[in-house]
Image (tube, rainbow, N blue to C red):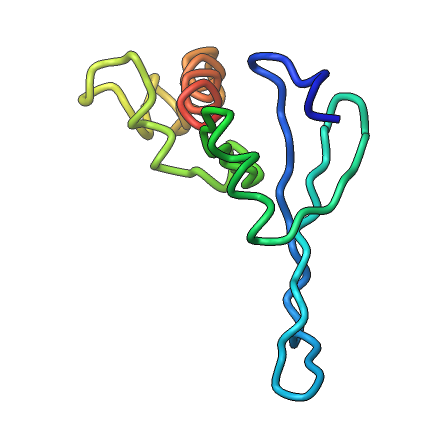
Length: 118
């Protein structure tokens, strides 16, 4: 699996949260699942074995949290808007108030939010 791993590819390291097995005072090794998300290949490494693997690569953590929707961001969306602060939020155009979420600017702000939270 590791011989085919390329730069900028994503792997997932995971381990079940459970009690480690033991026998007569000795604790069994816990195994980390290593999955290549591109090829779907999996292997298992103990904490002792994984050190050799980790030393061969450079890693960066990916935030896997689901991004918020425009509605969930609410006023936080204004932080990503290119409009001047005085133009963010609720606007009145001679009639009923119009939220800037109804304009194209909020779409651009949401795109900026998604870029910042990859």
